Length: 203
Image (cartoon, rainbow, N blue to C red; front, side, top):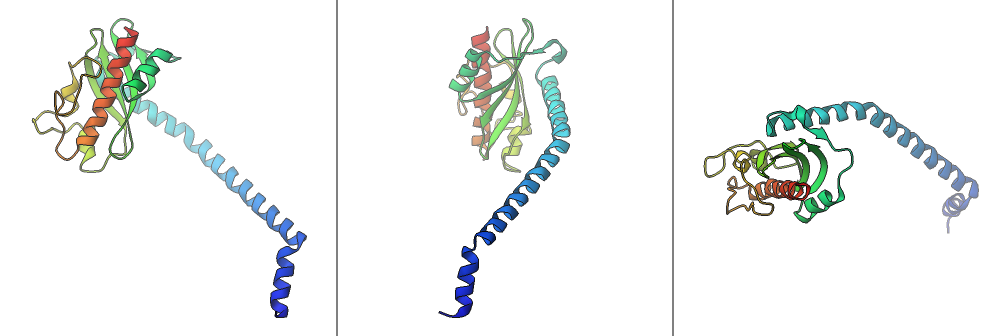
């Protein structure tokens, strides 16, 4: 074995070398974590503000008077469970004090989650659906979340208005998909069914 190889092995096993390497890695991790924290601190506020604006805009699209709906601070467990059983996730709830509910729900689309607002009136019928965030494929799934016309010539989100009955909304039955975007349409349908399920539980 050459002297060069022996020297390298000795350096690799040297406790001082290992300690120096460990300290260097630790310092690097601390610096990176600090920078990530700084970036998060700078962007958290604007992101929260943008999300709030999207929520308010979506509420205005699904009910005629969003100012009459008050945010429910603590989601009832029965409501959360009802949404889950219907295939969605309830994240926010707004009570219309007898005029119905506005619900922020999340359901699976073709490329990830679709976050939407769904209005439900006092009789248990959908008053509107508006998408807040999504990851759907451009030119395909985006036609659905953008409320373009389906194969029946009706804006795909508008067809939910007036429908009721949790679990009764079914693509291919009373819901018509946009050609090539059936999975995205099913995601919206799942979210609407989840919202209706929550409204049924809350009464």
